[in-house]
Amino acid sequence: MFKITTAPQDALIQKLIPIVTHACEILREEYERYCSGADFDVVKKSDNSPVTQADYRVNSYLTDALAQISELPLLSEEGSAEHRQNWKEFWLLDPLDGTKEFLHKRPEFTINLSMVRGADTVFALLAVPAQSVIYVCPEQGMPLKLKTDSGEWSVFESSETEHELCVGLSHSSQEKQEYAAYLDELANIASFGTVRAGSAYKFCMMLEDQVDIYPRFHPTCEWDTSAGQCLIERIGGGLVDFRQRPFMYNQRDTLLNNGFIAYRNINMKKIALQALTQMQYKH
Image 1 (cartoon, rainbow, N blue to C red):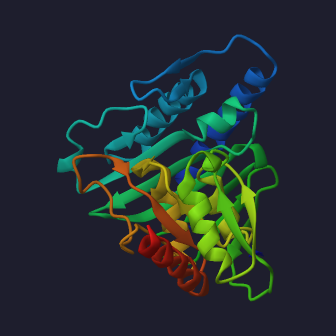
Image 2 (cartoon, rainbow, N blue to C red):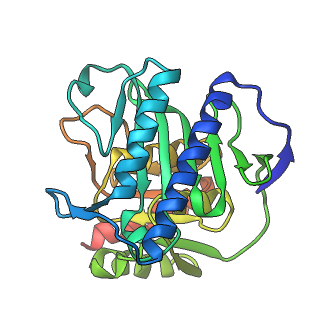
């Protein structure tokens, strides 16, 4: 949960908030245009995934804006990855995470921006334009939350409130049998409910105590997970691959991630990984 606090004095956060707030405004404008039925450009990438004029417009704005406040290079889903393996520190950006949610007119899309140093994410912003909310993971301290429409800041505070375990699933999870197999094993350990939501939006739901475990058995890319991983690790949770190793960034030839299990806290880690181990044993 979050409790109201004063605005942070961190210089980097103060520079980035107006930039990301405006990026959210751009995305809301594009979403309203798309939902209204107006002309709207959607094309397919080489991997057959969709990309829209909204992706490109936000990417262009953030690329220029970040260059004005920082000398760090930028690795964006809609940019070039050339020379990235020479970078020791850089920005990692997904200007529109959840393009499919956007196109299905589900307002569960996000802007994911993080700072990677070495192999680790050290700073992150995860914005939910439709809710006028930005979650911030500073370099030190607990995650912060800004309601951009009111200017209200709050800080994460651990809650011991009892509730039924909730598993966050992607809308497309029915398409892969691994999800059913995992949930079958989880059912042998604990009772739970499920919720379906867009990609990185599920990390936000973890911060809000709405999702406890997030299994992912179909591919993501590094810009999909970096900001969310940073935020949930800071609150005592985590994101690990199927060999129980935290994701590291910009260390491989590919930017594609394999599957992962994310969990909200140490108690959820035990349950989540027990189900994974049992599933792996049987399959």
